[in-house]
Image (cartoon, rainbow, N blue to C red):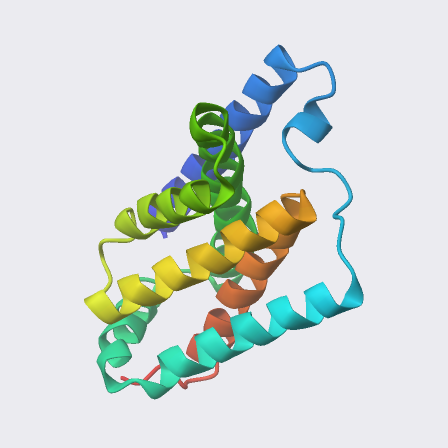
Length: 183
């Protein structure tokens, strides 16, 4: 439980640092942090939801992914469910999307001004920090990162990837807490 509280504390610290940087350097920091209302239509939302559900479903169907699910299950067994939920479904998506799909995103976009290069590089960096997973898990994380990056680019808002990331982690949380984790 102490490790889970430390993890949640780290996530809160990342969120505070990133938002304070935006507040310090930008007069309209909410817009600079891409926390403005998304620009998207119903077709866009439907496609995104479909991609996330298909990607998540395919992960549960691959036998190689059982090891990843067991790892997640083992690291949340001794922690209160509320803390696991808060850390994985709320704070991790917020902290990670602020860093990868906004902070790193802006730096790469300013450097190269090529959205697809930015999407690929931020997705690769995001996948690399999830080194605890098998190669199957890392491929899924990278593919999901591409979806998150594309949604960030098309909607011009960070709320879309934050929501998708939360949905994805929430689906995994539901499977693990319902006993469908594969161990």
